[in-house]
Length: 376
Image (cartoon, rainbow, N blue to C red; front, top):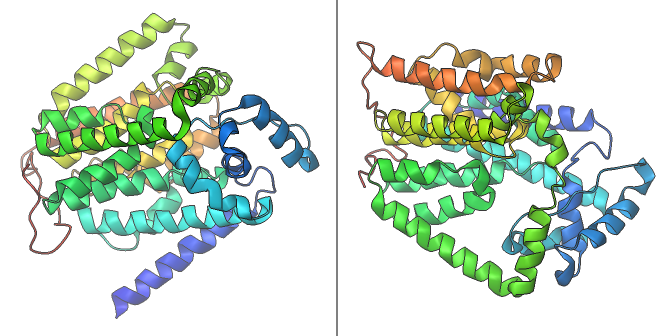
């Protein structure tokens, strides 16, 4: 009974926090990334990748709030279909419904983290302290709909339900550029059944997306991706690209750094249990991504949680308990610091596995009591 009461209180605290940080920011900055989703929800199907249409629609949509930056829609056509119901509502209603769904999705993520790796509903309080999650909430970023499927993939994999696990993982790859090392983690740990089922689902989604828009639509999509609309923001990124820019390196410097990080991950992942390697892949993939921003690091929450709870890497605690708020708010221009910090944490993880009394392959709390972690 006490556990249930604490759970309800934690959910209530998280809900109050979500309302506070969202209501504290006026429109249009509240849910600032939602206009692109709303535009595609209202757009004729032939216009979902039409930059001129987006410019006109968003100009009218945001006219009451003054000048704005046009946001394109660089997601798959299937995602556009899922967004269509939001077009039935006014923008004011739709954006708040969207923020409520994201908030609820993060509660679901907290429940999955608890089931997979232990703990209690205080995880929601740690989510409040973890700045990227709060930033994703205020911006209206759909991070919960990427993190949730990844957690579900591991949840089902432990039960040996690899087709369902692969399906969930394929849903997370709507943001494939943030998860480049994850398939490598599957292969390094001989998760071949999961990998090939995952590849099959990706093939299915690819064929479905092409059938929805045709070859002409694919060309339009590539034009949107290559338009560089968000490229002007890369200096704010928490990735290797921002690091290279800060020190005046060219693209070759970025490539060298990316190769070194990928090589380090290959060496590290083989010395970790699978799920730790999986989340390390997520964390280090964020460094490799050409575009990865503060809210994208919400995907790395389980990585920090594992570092702190299972491996007792004490440096992870400031990240979980508010340290990134200081980094983001007081050192806004020092985004280049994040790559060395993330690599440093991965080095500490490796070092911790070498310490006496810390098994290299820690066994997590099973997702379902009595069901062991899947071996394939």
